[in-house]
Length: 115
Length: 112
Image 1 (cartoon, rainbow over the protein chains, first blue to last red):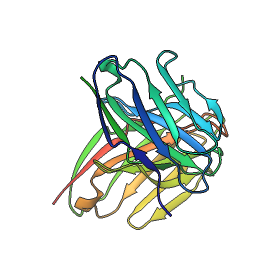
Image 2 (cartoon, rainbow over the protein chains, first blue to last red):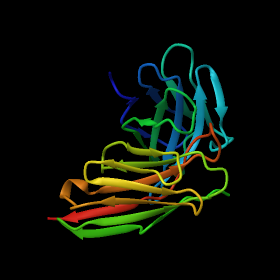
Image 3 (cartoon, rainbow over the protein chains, first blue to last red):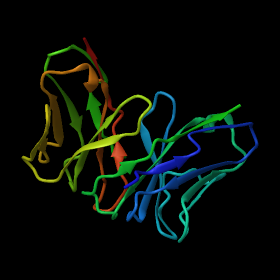
Image 4 (tube, rainbow over the protein chains, first blue to last red):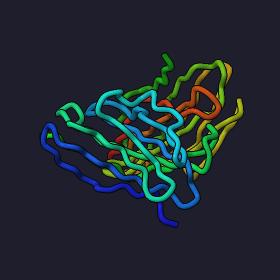
C-alpha cells in the first residue's frame, strides 16, 4: 500500500510564475490536508479537502492560493504569481475520515524555492 | 487563538539517557491529542493518537501520557538512542472534525 505521494519534491520558480503542487493520498483515503512549514516555523494548516469539496480553507491566503481535490486524480495546491515569501516546504496529509481521532499520514513534502 | 505549546524547544541528551518533554493544549472541548515524530528530510510519522484522560500509550521505548483536565501530555523516551534524534510534534484538533493545530515541536539530539 503506497503512502502519500507528493510531486515534485523540489520546485524552483521565479517571482511571478505559477507553482503547482500535487498530492496523491493513500489508497482509500478521501480526506486531504495541506500544511506549510515556513523557515524556523512549525507546520501551519492551510486547507482541508474532501473529494470535490473544500471543507476548511481558513489557513490559506485569500489571494493567489487555491486548492482542489477532483473526483479523479491528485489534489492540487496552486500558487499564482509566486513571491519570495512563498518559499517553504508544503506537506500534504491524508486520512480515511475527518474524525479528529484518526491519524494523518504525511507525504514527503514539496520544497518550493522562489528566486 | 488556539495554541499548542511544547517544551523544551530543543534537547541534547547522551545515548542511554531517558528523557521527556511536554505538550500543553487547551483543556476545554478536548477531542484528541496527536504525537508525531519528524526526522530530518523525512515526513512526519504518527506515534500516538490519544483520546481518553489518563491514557498511557507505549511503542517500544517511547511512551506518552495524557491529562485532559489540566491540558498536558508527556512523551517519554527510555534509554535514548542516536536514531531517536528527531523533532517530536504534538497536535490538537479544535473540534471533532477539524484540521490539526501543531506545536512547534521539541528537537531531540541524542549524542553517541
